[in-house]
Image (tube, rainbow, N blue to C red; front, side, top):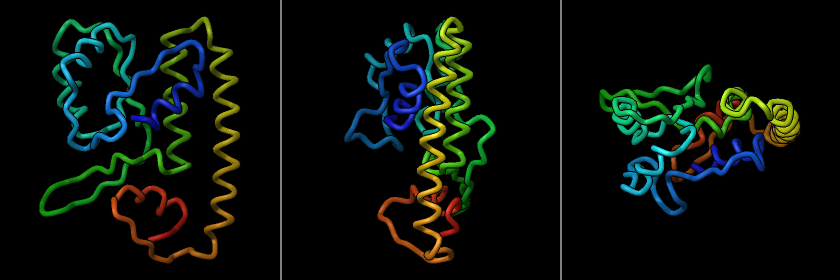
Length: 171
């Protein structure tokens, strides 16, 4: 999805070509990859997973084939939000909306890129540091701006802001 693309490109820049599996305007929660996308995965060096529902089935099926693609779990070591609705356990995949968790996604992407393209490790580490400094600045500013709203409730159309609300002590 676009947030992942942003992370990987910010770190790797000229050394990778990133394709977004779920194109703009499509709903990532129930997206079905096209046959062309599935074929492209066979020649991809890596696939960065984020925990979107369609990925679980896709990745499980692909791992059972002879695909050479590395599957990178960007959410490794993040603290995922879990909710229980109508007897179903739902994991909120919008982890990138938390500045705290976003740093973990970046760290996981950095380590994966170093493993995949080790000759550019120093370049990746430098870009990662620059990106983290920007994230820290944004986090600082958001903390300052949102502090007066601590404990307040806000309403949105899409339930994507759980991580954001948790980080900034909003409801």
